[in-house]
Length: 399
Image: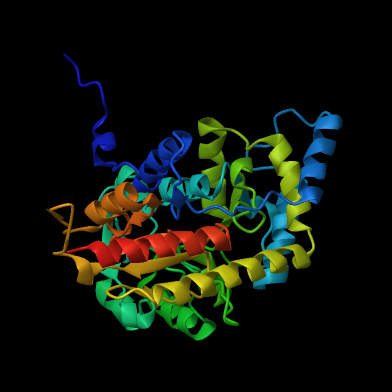
């Protein structure tokens, strides 16, 4: 009998983020009082002006196919965004609109990676990065980042990780899961290493508007013309505009790469949803006041969560400067037991915490950090207070 499943599929690992979320939702549906720090998406509704733009597009009959790369007015709006926010000049032909930033990442990897290529992925990392790299035939190479440097790698550490097989660096700032944000000086030093080695950078900037402590991200493509020619920048509207379900992401790339991606997408999925594209035009031209208001709420939640973690003996939080996640370091608790079972890793810890206290988190092993849990603070302050009180009680009851 012929093999039913392609070999490439055997390399994929299921998403623990979605697995934990599914278990937590099932418990909640059964009436259990679950507090979930799991899947990261804003708990705000999409702003009214964006919804109104979608309704108008429907009323105007904008329900047909669009160019596979996206509506021209949208790609022009994205070019304006890159110029205004990042100091980057792109032509509409260099912009590809896809079904979410995750789709854009896959397209970028599919268009550039081959068998034998190595891709440097700083760890902790967003769990999808290595899976996409593997399914495209390349090999992930993990660059472990230190807690004492807020989970950021240095230019020197990157240089030491590069080999003749290195094709790409995946660079996520602000970061999921750590909230790490690289400043301009750090980014320029990293860019110099990439330029010298002539490796591509996939720059995931989906959280760029969600920053705290006065920290500002800097686009690596803005470092030089050479770096811009080596960079594929990923962004979208899911996080900044609370549009996770609308499924619109986009990328900016050198012309040859953008052309290849457009050709591939035209066969793979064609265009992103036409109505979502019209809504995205409105989102990109929205007032910054709405974004700032959301960031202010996230910042208060971030400070609340960090203060509550400080009250729990045996754990620590690495303070994030961006996104809406905290990495909770729990490694010092390994070896202790719950209900007679010794906890030795983040999966066992997260499962026990969910069973005992109805608190859902994401095991750090998903992100290459098995001594951590990821907590999202995209939930109410009340839930944060309740959830951290339960985590504290759980930790205190370990033996």
